[in-house]
Length: 265
Image: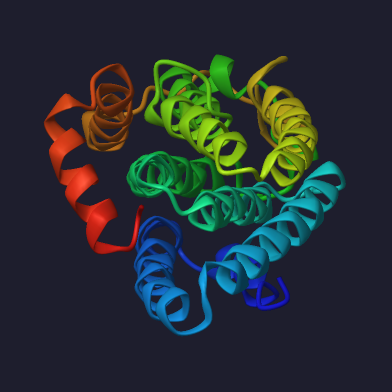
């Protein structure tokens, strides 16, 4: 915020693979560039400027994302607003600026890229199956397409920051770093807003997954088996996200080195 307006419109119209790349890769690359510019800003203006700017923008964006998620009716736009929520958490971690915070930010970027790519690719299969992006017209996804419904549901659980997925570890580390860096007021406010976004995303996803199966607006449908070409890539993404959450040991040194390069102190 205020440069967010393009994101929901782009995601709602783009093919699912493009949305996956935009949310999982484009946003990550963009924020990595912001981290590099933060190093220059800290050296030229002192750490207070970027710290205050990032914390303020993070809270404003998070508040807007939570409010829009509460009233969302389109599941692709819902995922787009979820990206705004996660970029806000990343900005809050960058505002803290410590070695722990930047390491957590980089882990969060990786985990979000994996989980959101699975979620958007799943949404493309849901659109192909249901012929609608309206949340209210998708019911019983677990009953109609169990593998697809499970993949979408698990991706949303990952985005909600639940274990064993890596977003749980990174969000916890960002919160710890925020309090340790004397950003307790911003971190506490962010946690409240995250809970609101959590409730909205969980409630809308539950409506899509549970209940009796429907094939479209007002039509019943028989269960559909998803082929390996559908569920294997989704499963690989989820397993990778979970593996980072269970043990980030292979990345610990890399994350620490990257945090030092991007100005973590």
